[in-house]
Image 1 (tube, rainbow, N blue to C red):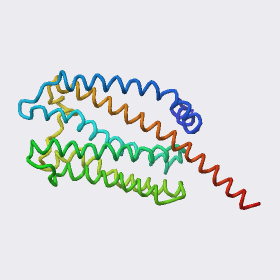
Image 2: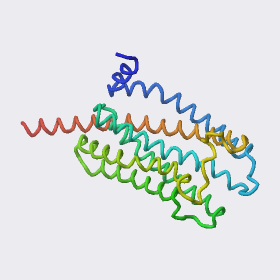
Image 3: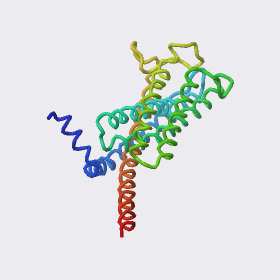
Image 4: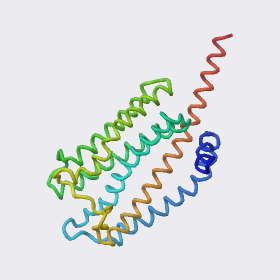
Length: 250
């Protein structure tokens, strides 16, 4: 057995996972707070206003990380769905289910901040641009997954149905990423993750990366906490069903 397989099997134990999460969460929370403190200082006191956009450019420091995490969250759900359908990992469905509401919030935040940023730049809050429309579709996918988990009472059936929907919907993630390259859109092309290097000055790029790291850490803090809560909820529900079955048998 390889080290990766050994770690995979150890994390398959919900009790062991919860103990690991309990040890990680305080440190990860501390790192998140520090990164936000540094990122907000750089945003408001170091990053200069843009020569065209003025102070509104600072919406970027929320909008861009939120958009990144919207796609990352759905990618995490897709990977967890594979683990649930193929390997029957006991925590894969928990991971996917708890990532959906967090990803939905970041997607909504990306849409709202994008609209606020777009108004002074484009003269309108919304256009049916390829990038904007595909992100809106992503929000609907998140909401559909949440509704599916809520509508099916039996957890394993709900998990399988949600996993299939998540994998089918994952095709939207590369569409979001490459929409600005494939179609003529109002949304600007990629300016950070480029083969020829970032097209943003370091005075803007540095706070952007710090804020992206802060939001990413926040995502995982929320995700780990939500996973432990979901595990406890399922244990309580299983205990309740056992007690009901015993009462019915008496």
